[in-house]
Image 1 (cartoon, one colour):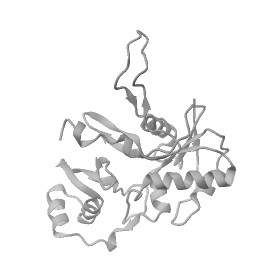
Image 2 (cartoon, rainbow, N blue to C red):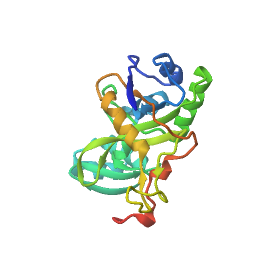
Image 3 (tube, rainbow, N blue to C red):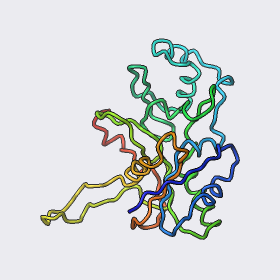
Image 4 (tube, rainbow, N blue to C red):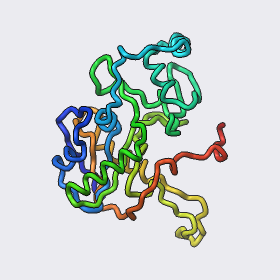
Length: 241
């Protein structure tokens, strides 16, 4: 398997043809998996917010004070969240409107000009499918798409990239019913391959390399449409809720 960086020097703007920009910047093969950083998707879809246009609510003002956060950022976090999971050490952990558990609902001020913040795409699965279909139309290549973002992890230091949108592949590799090397039947083993591809891609994408896209090549998988909701643990299985 290969992990290949795609460098894009252009600053992505709303209404840019992102599929064409990616296609023109790379030599795609049938069976490739493209991992795309959420940030350029959000910029292309107009999810870049001018903070001067945000009016904090009284709730946002109240939360921001002890946590020393910009109340406008807190207002955006609240608007992008279903619920607050925990607040501590100036970090607000929430469940986003899409169901992901992450810090600050994905609201991010990095890699954007001062005074602006990006929000997560409204529906990253739809975003991934749109790009996949357009790239196939442009190049004739049948590929899969993963949209990734950087998440922290409970009980472990550091962050890693995880999938927040998929198209063309199953984000889970289910081993249930297969046998291990000792002929034991595996019953519950599922590998979150979309998250693993996202993490592998980040090794070549970095944060400062103008490399928001990477190709995963020479990995065998079945082309099928699935949703990233498969990666979200149901409430009935949540041991910490």
